[in-house]
Amino acid sequence: MTSTLINVRLEAEDAQRVKALRGAGVQLSSLVRDAIRSEYEKRLSPKGKRKPSAVLAEILAALPDDDEGTTRIETTDRHAVKRHIASKLRSRS
Image (tube, rainbow, N blue to C red; front, side, top):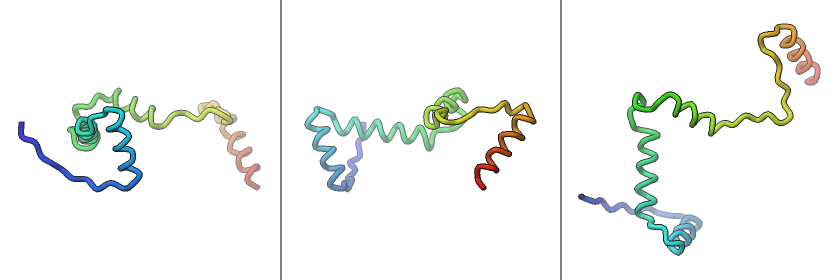
């Protein structure tokens, strides 16, 4: 296996994190390799190889529902939608 050495400039805060990770026994080379592979899969791997269910699961995990304090309306009921919109407009004025 041929390996390539890369140098990365770190800010002081990141350097402290590296020091803590080393102290905890984390191999930084493995950490960097995993991060590179993960980022490559996200950005450059052929999109056709990803299952739609995996893409959807990733989207839903990143954007969870915020049901607290919100009222759901039945969007197929035009009268309910009309009342909801009217109440929103009234509350703005």
